[in-house]
Length: 125
Length: 204
Ligand SMILES: [Zn+2]
Image 1: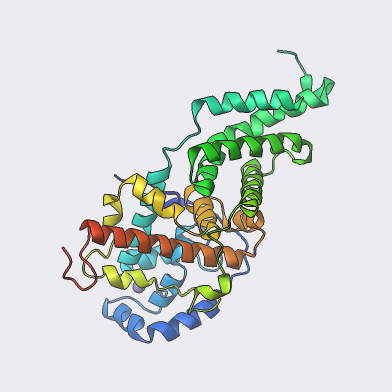
Image 2: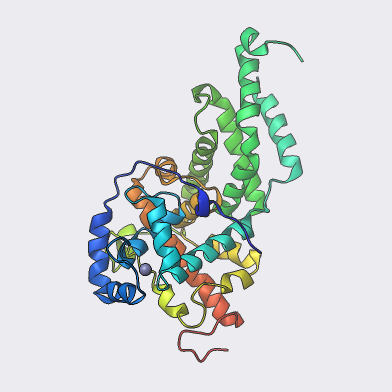
């Protein structure tokens, strides 16, 4: 089943007070130099490409359409080109697809609307 | 039936507005109520109470603002008040949740578990709807509500923050932690079901 999900396309630009740099700093400490090394070994033009740490740091915001400091195209370009990070994007996407798929079919029982209408006319209009 | 009802009778006009702006969100509010309460009959009660309250305070609602978020807010408040009267079984203590402190590390620990076996998370597709829903229902309310509002209802961080009366940073933190907890439950289930080899690589 292939669900085209909102995170793949929606560019919801929200103004938020998120400090991406401090998280990147934190992440750099977690990952050490490994990610940067892997990225350059993959043959990236590392001067133009955002780092793996940066990409992973903004992955959730990217999927949520909530990037506020880095252009969406730049993040997409990294995940498209980076063998190391691409599976993480796929993994998080597969998770969201599963949640969406499992819950979208759920609708209110047919008689609930009628009950509401009755309730409201009793409440007085 | 009658032309220009809104201009002649503000009460009738208000009812028309309510039917046009609030009622279309019935399915979404029901889904939300279902995930909050975990039981269809409880969810129906919750929805009825929500719409009744919304209807009674409809004059406080400004046309054009997010009716869906407003209804979700009422629904959650009704639910939480009911919880206070009963038992509060799934309260979380935010501070105790992480070795990670207030921030959430962007590296998802489950990624290393699936590395080599199922790095792209294909196992999620094998899990039946009911199992995913019950995994969502097993989350503490704060996580459950955040994940449901974001991943199922598609609300932006800012709207969730307003609805839950917490800063956007808290929404992000709850969202990330809630998703990871949910992924953990689903991963364990997938291993148990043999959809994925376990992290030692010896699983079926
Ligand atoms: Zn990368």
